[in-house]
Image: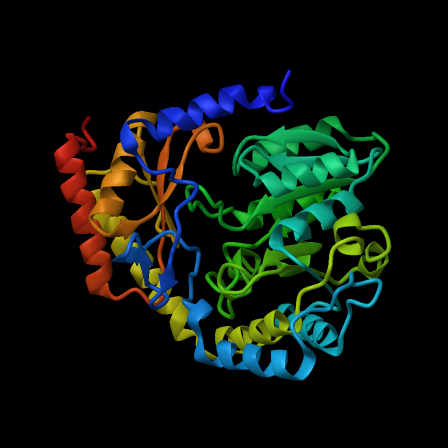
Length: 400
């Protein structure tokens, strides 16, 4: 028997997606980014509406220059983990910058956002503890629970009352209880009612971790995320996030006011056994963070663009999520239709993400778009126009 025989079902599903000469949607190559909003795909200039590059900072001249200068001064890699030879002065500087930005005392920087969740959650919640997870939690959150062997209890998506009921059933049970929620959920773009979850946390004595990966740089007066926007930052014990969204680079972090966070450096396996971020990435991230702090107009423009895209897709007769955020997904009922729709969008010059069950809420296929502060109104209107053309060709509208 082949070692790959267990993937026969996956191979069949992929064959169905690419049947009839269709593209592999999970293997698209952006041959060259021309700008933050336009890339070369299949030799054609294509509007990018699927990159999570919310503030457009992946192409920041200041970040690019910082990366070049850091590579010249420090080299291109550290060749070691953070607890060996992989901590340089730049790593400490970035952690201090993030502490100041989030107004927290402690920060750990990880090599990816995935590892930030994996390393933080697995170290905080062990086999004798309970993790209370939103049913729509990101894969990195679930994987963190497996690595730490905590007991997992899921509650209904964005439902603080359901969480409260489940915590009440655990009253008197030994072990810490850690609630994990996300600021903005990555599939539908819906925002967590953070204040409601903070109230449950206060009443039950649980701990609260907020994954603000998609909401830092987006929400709050200073861009610190939904906890800031809802005025409950003091109730959030741990904030986890990534550099690969609003900051346009790569890496992740956890910030906290709890002194015990520094102990996690010595027991978080993803932190201990992964080479640290190279200096050019650290320098670029700090430059992007400076832009995030000094250019609040980017957040205003981003949300204006999100509302424009959300309203435009709805006006075209397409089903979307309930609120405008930088993630706007078009909801379809049939996988084959979603695949054909996605292919036709790319034919006409718009790249979006195709998200398929079982990775989507309610098992619906999604055409997931992400908007940027750097999209022009004309680019958004053009994308909406192309969506409407394809919907018309395929006979899709809200009533259907």
